[in-house]
Image (cartoon, rainbow, N blue to C red; front, side):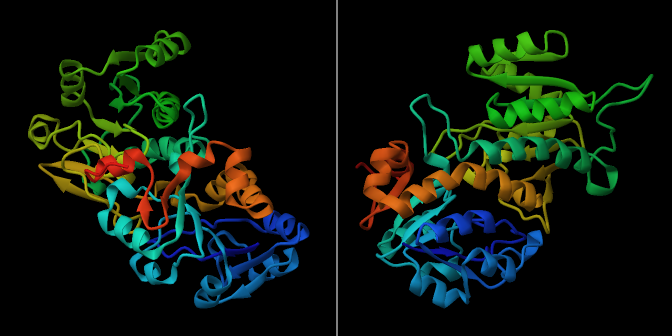
Length: 362
């Protein structure tokens, strides 16, 4: 199979679809891999590293002309829409529910589009979203801690406090992979932490792990509002796979929160879980509404691209290899979860949750 690894062009995105060691395995299996010039320069991997692995280095146009399977990290940007056509299988994060324009462009392209984030195992786990959720959860506390600094617009509070000075109150909404990793980081920095979820079993597990360090609350309207209005830092990590994130924090609450509090919306890739959220970039990561700092970077793991690429490749490669070796149909038979990853095929949305996000039925 002809496999293409483009250079990511999203703002401050330095991850890459495949590292040289995996490219080498594909080439040894008889596949041809086309890598865009300087695709991994942001993580100190050179074109020569890919050449040594057996790849060919080309420009963007040649890559899309040659490749059948396109392996990316982030969704295509508008300048890339026209490069895709019906011969392509696109394998990347897509988050289609958050962007009607992207969904329309990919539907019109004729490409088969497989989204990392909707590949779901029989037990409900999301194996390709998992590693990025781990990273995003950990980064959410790092970012929130920085944004609490006065120079960033925050209230000027140290997360862990000091002897004689109370720590900051961190509220984590959602006890999934993002929330669990945010919790570990917040506790490590000695914050006062409250975590909320609608799943009581998740809360019971966390309480058993941290019996005295964490307040675990069922996420109902009363508990949620009380926690948010007393928070110095709120981490929004609500996930509904394939669907647009529910908006759980209305704008009207902002004026009731402590001035200089910080909101970190990890669900921004899926549209955001705060009413006042809008996507930001690593270059300009935050803005202020009603004296509340909003951090809404849409590709948070891109801040640590070396770690993120290694972790993502660890999870994606077996599927990439299966598609290349067996073809998509047989790969889906071998790994049934790949079927849930197919979002668009033959000019149609074929994932029910994404269709529902746009008021469609399939």
